[in-house]
Amino acid sequence: SVDEQLDEGKQFLYFGAVPLARGTHAVTLVLDGQTLGPGSGGPPEPIGPLVLSPTSAEDPPLRRLPAARARELCGKRLDWIEAVR
View 1 (cartoon, rainbow, N blue to C red):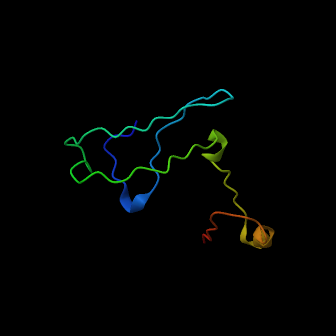
View 2: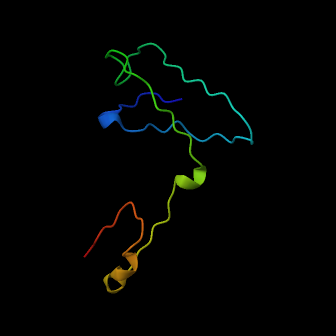
């Protein structure tokens, strides 16, 4: 469950990890009533999409390279490149 989180900029909210066996599963998404918690006072907004992803996608590997090896990053599919002095 997710509680007391603001959904700034329509970002995804992390609900947690659940081990699933192979096969078909039913998923139910329930929106409880308003509380005194942050973000609860406004009108309800549409919920979705619900995204399920493998846990291996949660922590992608971080590569650190010296500037002299920057060309090794060319042609790669990367989410982020940061140059630090």
